[in-house]
Amino acid sequence: MPDDKLRTLTDKSRQRLRMPLDRIGLWLARSGVHPDSITVLGLLLVGLAAVYIGTGDFLSGGVLLLLSLPLDALDGAVARAAQRQGSFGMVLDSTLDRYADGFIFAAFGYHFARHGRLEMLLLALFALIGSYLVSYVRARADDSKVAVSVTVGWFSRLERVAVILVMTLAAGILQSAQPLEIGLVILAVGANLTALQRLRYVYSALKNRGE
Image (cartoon, rainbow, N blue to C red; front, side):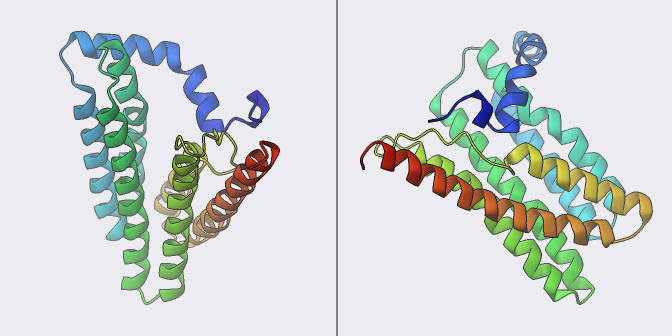
């Protein structure tokens, strides 16, 4: 069964940063900021970053992605402070996260397709599939009919975001697509292996329950 040693880096980071984020969230809530507005703003920044990445301006795209990162955690902090932890906010946050993944990998794929690198386009699609499946397996396992908390994974959202940031900023600074190529290989392999890792975990948990 899950324990602290098996929790993802994303979960651990959220717990460690919860107190400072809650302070900022309380200030924003008192200022009248709605948590859903922060969620939408984060997606808009990612969408703008995707435009820059698709056109080859990796440095601007990487900086915008970096600016969007705190918003991904602040919306939850504001929701807690404003006591607006409804189900819709969670669904909206999760849905827009999937849109953000789609924007970014579509941007990478578009950039490489423009330069005739169809093999890299396929790799970007494979990385996107893996990213979606990592989240999907956890969501399905959390269903009341399954009731398995999937708190494992080598490449949860934080790890994937870190790789995307590093490879995009490095590509912009070095003026080379090579960091993107290396990063997409890491993401494609890492995300899909994590999805399989989570499937195996669910299988083991259900088997231990005699199901």
